Image 1 (cartoon, rainbow, N blue to C red):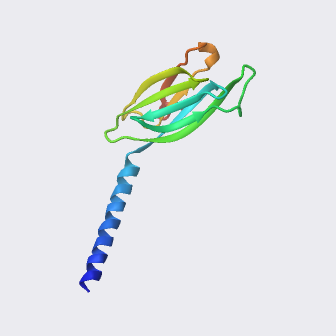
Image 2: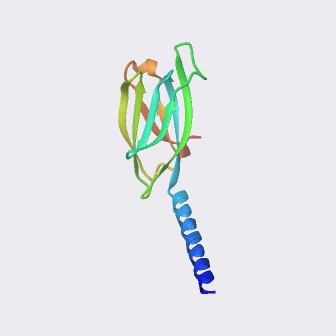
Image 3: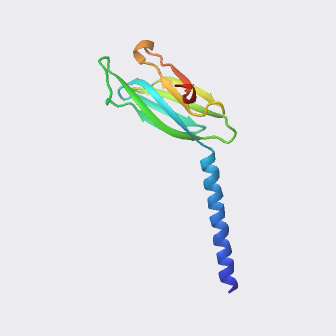
Length: 136
């Protein structure tokens, strides 16, 4: 009888711990969008610390006459205190065209990162950060 009650107690504690871990994981999870333009086979890597959150390879689904493709990706990042630093890299044919850090604060409820058209910036790439809650 004692063995069954200890076993049931341990199972109950384990289930409570799993529930708490799931709750904290979901409460610190935020969604971010990356949109913009790039050339075919450009690779965009978004990291949080040393972990790769998203690796986007620009495909030719939406290509224009200047061989520029548009893309849209959604992924999640995690934050404990409302602030997170993301490292964003663009690799085009094994040449790093952009390697920058982006700081997102608690004001960014629904953040997005947008990349400008590469034909307008030649060999450099530019991006801007926005908040979808401010867009109507």
